[in-house]
Image 1 (cartoon, one colour):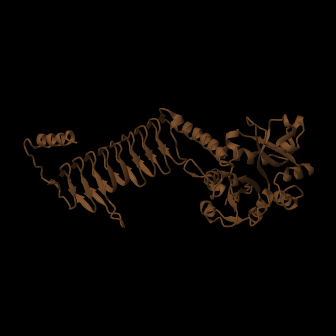
Image 2 (cartoon, one colour):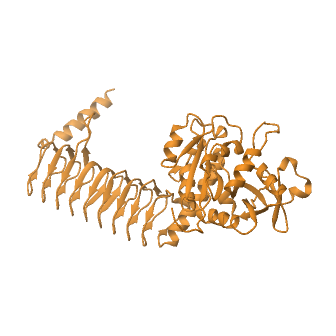
Image 3 (cartoon, one colour):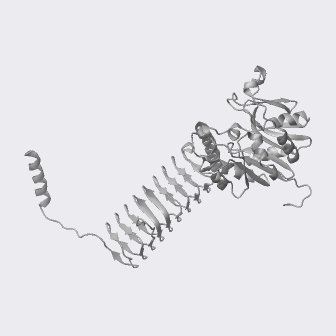
Length: 448
């Protein structure tokens, strides 16, 4: 913690106790996935850039949500009695400074918007700042009624007059205030309403009643949209993917058909990477400068070095590393595999728990049998080795540098460097027997 006397700490309370009933899911709402990760993780990552302390409010029996929240502390809302009640459960973490209350089902709020919210709250005489938006369809949102730049009240759609319904500035639910004021307001919120719940929006009325200045900070709808249903989850995914694609292109990545490429939030694509249409990047992918990812490929948990070409129709699974200028072609699947520089695996192959030395060539239809039904075993292939088509390598096995594996071989023993290995039945050819066999079949067919 800084010793600067002007330093003012900021705490974010993330409300993540929602069950997500409208999702029709046994998974809590905070754990629904966007761009390869749970919604809560997206919000935690952005909030951590702005706030000094984070605390997450969860419901009972939500250990899986607590796991995502780690290493940040969690508190439990044992009874779901509304948003103000949820925020109040974290009051012991408020400390000094400022406090903002965020929602796990608003996962797309950027660090820039959160910074703007905090900066607005810290302006002289501003007692409370809130986030607001102007959505394309504002019907279901509460309206933010302002006067001379100050928020006077928030009116729910059902309670709004025709004049108030015409207002397009809508409440996004996120509030930020001085910690002591927030604590006092939360403790005073009542539940005299149809549902008997404690609503965070009542804090706005309390601040106005005390003549505190309440200011609205506007952000775009895509950042502030709530995610409460599967259709809204799909809308949020689309908005986030658009943001991720644009960021990639702004940093020198070519996306031939951006709308068909799907990225995870942690996807790292270097400048001059080319991505063809219909490519999916799962979590944990790093692609270095100048690599090409061809159409219909799927990558997760892997690293692709400069100049490599992947696909089309390739699948790279976790713990896979592709060396510089290597080639991984169509209908090739790699899992826990490391390919050295210049390696070629161009067609119809599976390599699992395998290491392949530089400049080796793996022929079409090569399969590494790495699993015996209980344990995984490794295969090591040296440099400048050629594995002929339709070969089966039964792990554990080691093949040395400059070796040659004849096509169609089943290799069960180690092969030393410079050796030729054959593991197949010897061909037998019987002259004229092919014609005789076909004639016999035709005769049988004609005779019924």
